[in-house]
Structures are given as C-alpha cells and as structure tokens.
Image 1 (cartoon, helix red, strand yellow):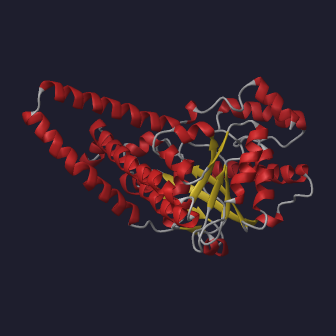
Image 2 (cartoon, helix red, strand yellow):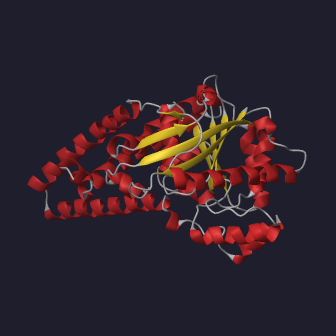
Image 3 (tube, one colour):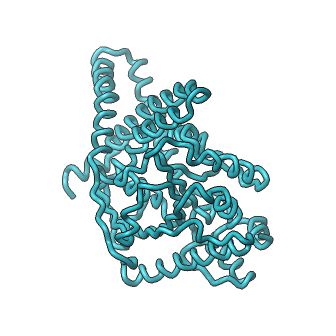
Length: 384
C-alpha cells in the first residue's frame, strides 16, 4: 500500500473531507434558503438556481467516488439507449441492495450532466438530515411518511410540478420500489410473501411495493417519456461497497445495467396489471443478478462514459475556500491561542467527527429502517 493510499485511510484525511463537505454544505443550503424569496415570483428561476447549487454540493460525493477512491463504473446499455440518457425526463427504477448503489447512479448522472436535477422518493425524516437532506428539500424531492392516504396526496401533488422546468433542464426521479434496503432478514420476509401469494421467488431483490409505483405512473403519463430500469452490482474481488471504504480511498468496480422502457408501455387498465408488470420487472432483475454472480457481467453492450473534470474542480474550489482560513486560524490558535480556545477547537473537531459519522450511517444497510421486517408489515404486504 502506497503512502498516498495510507494517508487517505487516516482519520485526519477523513476529518478534512468532512470539514470541507460540512462547510460547503452550509454555504450551499444557506444560498438555497435565500433563493426561496424568488419562489413566489419566478419558480423557473428558483429551480434553475437550485439545480446548480445542488450540483455544487452533491458533486463532492461523485468527487469522492471518482477521484478520491478511483472507482470505475461500467455501463451496460444499448447504443440507442445511451443516446437518450440525460436528454429527457426519466423515472429511474433501482433495487437497493448495497450501501452505495445510489452513489454509482450519481457518478453516472454526473458524467451525463444529470446530477443537479436528480430527485428522490425518500422517508420524510431524510429531509431533516443535515445538509444533504436540506438540499433534497430545497430541490423538491418527494418525502413520504409511509401512511398511504398522506403519501398518495403528496405524490399526486409533487408529480404535477415534476416537469415545470425551462427547456434543457431534464428531471431524473429516483424510485426504489422495494421501499427499503436489502437485508437477508427482509429477503426472507419477502420470500414468505411470494410463496403465500404464488409469486416467483426472489433471491437477490425484495418484492416491490406497487402502490407508489402505480400512482407515479398515472401521474407521469404524458409528462415523462421514459422509465430507466437500473440494476447495480459490484465485483466480488473488490472491497465492500460502503461509503466508509470510499472515504478510505479504496477503489471498486461497479457494473451498472440500464434499460430504457417507454413509460406509456406500462399497463394501467387496472392496478393489478400495473403491479404485475412491476413484479415481472423485478423478477428480471433477480435473474440478471443471479447470472451476474456466475459471469460478473450483465447482458448488452458495455460503455465507458468518461469522467468529467467538473466535480474535481468544484471540490478544489471548496477546498481552497474552506481550508485556507481554517489552516490560518488553527496555526494562530495553537501558536498564540489560550488553553480554553484550544480545548474548544478540539471539541469542535470531535463534533465534526460525529456529524460525518452520522451522515455515513444514513447510507449503511445495517442501519436501515424496520420497514419490511415486522409481522405487521408482512400482513400489510399480504393485503395489497
């Protein structure tokens, strides 16, 4: 292991990355807050501003993946599909198997110039997560309480705004129909439901929950032309796909399958027809992943979408803006500062460590929600 790689794994390096992320995030979200005064008068301008502000913040994740850790992403897609990705509004459907499958999607989104206008369906509590959750809120992601009457109204309302952007600002909606992250425990519960209802057994994905998908398809009819069906896998010979390993600079290889599906091709005559279409799609994902375990490849042509320098430049800008005054202050503090001031600086460093670890914890599968585990949830699934 080289010296540079060893330095990437140190707490000091991780604290510095966390400091840059936190300080730049505070600046970006403050500017987002200020931009709210524009909302009543010009929503297009508000949304254009926040697309670029979001990129200024979120690109630090793609910097970590592409430049800090040196991750590589192989895209499996037809030549025709690649021509359209990033040039139209899309509903992206992914399974949630790994801690950082979302990061691999963001890396490709950055390379295809889609990152700043990516929105998620997420738990309502996520909008309270410092910085990234606040940015999701200002960029109008869809937050759900997992109370269907409430969530149905929220989805219907928010989807009406989904394409209200100027020409050239294409929206990417990211939906995880499983409703939670994959664990062995949740997979067993999912398998039990599949057996009870006579559905094909799924080994590598969870049985998707159709209600949110159905209302989304109805809401996007005539607005979004395309569903992008995505499946992510990682080379088994690499490090575990976690954000902590990314912070430690460990490179990994991601395989990313993407398929464009006309949204109008999804049957909506009945809710059951739409739900059946979704289950068949996830069965296809499951079969593909089973094959990947044997071959370490997905079907279709491969594409190496080159990384851009934009996120590296953005991170370098924030590094200079935030670190120059920091180093000046710390140098002055430990040369001429009082003992009390030095203790305060150390305490702030400890708090920063806690905040960074908290944000990493949001991405970890073993700290996911109880959604999908309990008997009540299982009973609810059986009643759908």
